[in-house]
Structures are given as C-alpha cells and as structure tokens.
Image (cartoon, rainbow, N blue to C red; front, side):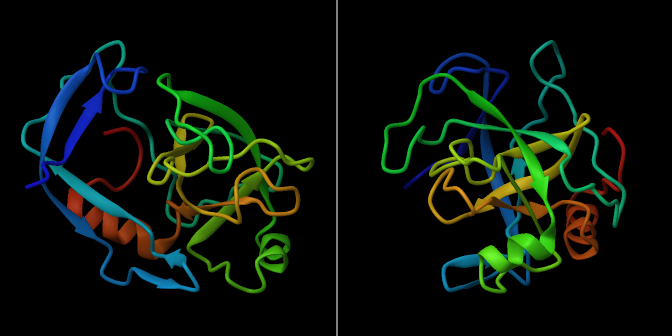
Length: 187
C-alpha cells in the first residue's frame, strides 16, 4: 500500500524538514479532464498532524474571490519538476519568475481550452516554465498563492504559457473554504 506524505520546510527533495503522513484528500467535485487538459484542478490534503510554523514553514495569503491579476504581473513558480521536457528532476527546489498572460491570448494558444478557473503565465521568449513533476505546486504573486501548477503544452515552449488553477476563481475558492474554513488572507 502506498502511503502519501508531505515534506515541509526543506528545499532538498528527499531529506530535511518535517515529514507528515497524509490522512486523506478531497478532489474538487467538478474536476474534469478534457483532451488531457484538467479543469477545476485542485485537491486539499488533510495531514495527520498540524505543521509547526517556523523559519521555513508558514502560511501563505490567498487572493480575494475574483481578485484580478493584471496581465504582465511578475509571479514565481517553484517545484522539483524536470528542468527540461523529458529531463531529470533536480534534488534542490527550483524557482523561476514568469509573467501572467491575458486569458484571451492564452485561450488562442490553446484553441479555446482555457476556462475562467485558469490563469496562464510565461516569459514571452519561452524557455522558463513549470514542467513535469511540478503539478500542484505554487504560483505566487506579491506574497499570495494566486495559482496552482496544472498543465501546459510541453515546458517553456514559446507561445504556449503554463496553465495554472486560478485560486481567486469563485468555484475554486468556494472549494477551499468549504474544505478548510480558510476564506482569504493568511491562515
């Protein structure tokens, strides 16, 4: 039997920090995947015990419901996903700055698959992006969790932004609030 665990407070994959078993999880009730493109792509994990805040573990603020993120906003995505398409995964946590893309522009790139529960981010010249293994990771702007790594066409391909679950979308925030009691701000 596979046991799911969370490692918190470490930037090294596989060591350090605090390891907590996952007691359970809830997937968004309207989660769907069409053409391998997930919508309502969020799950909430319930940990066996609470994490203790410290220098490397702490809460993050959430945006308000329907809070707009301006096109071109600087964001940071982080994770232990592959560094290139089909490449290997690093042992150290990686982070890269990407910029939000207009939803309509992104929708053109993805032939109408972008919904109101998604936001997109990239660098115009390509080459920087989330990649395989980063799914579920954070997209952060101004200290707020604005997105969750979801999908894209490859990694860092010019003209194909990374696609993230929009944490400010009403259906996503309602799910977060229902499952956790967290509405907005730091918790």
